[in-house]
Figure 1 (cartoon, one colour):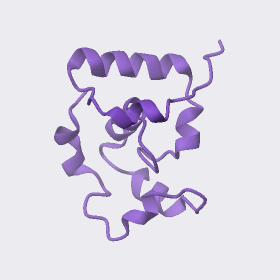
Figure 2: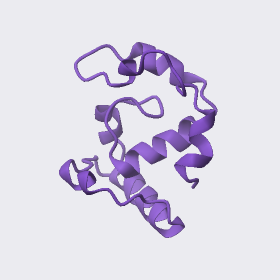
Figure 3: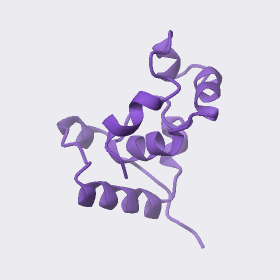
Figure 4: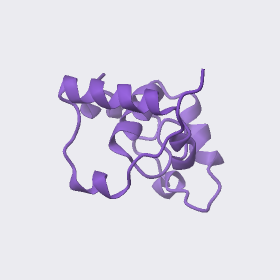
Length: 105
């Protein structure tokens, strides 16, 4: 687990000309996904987005795709972020809970 300030400067989207491409509600996500595809911090970004319930494309996944992650994965990430002191306290996080599918083995 890393704090956002440790990985975000290395993200492919840093300084991207059209940030609206990453807020794709009802729009094509292919451009944002292409930017993310070979990003060196894609996993860090995805972890952050899952834990902090971000909107838009993060780590190459849409909100809908992140909601499909198994609940066990989400729970482990939240615990790791909390224990590492990286969980940002933001009131708006409670307004849109992560809904995820249970892990089926």
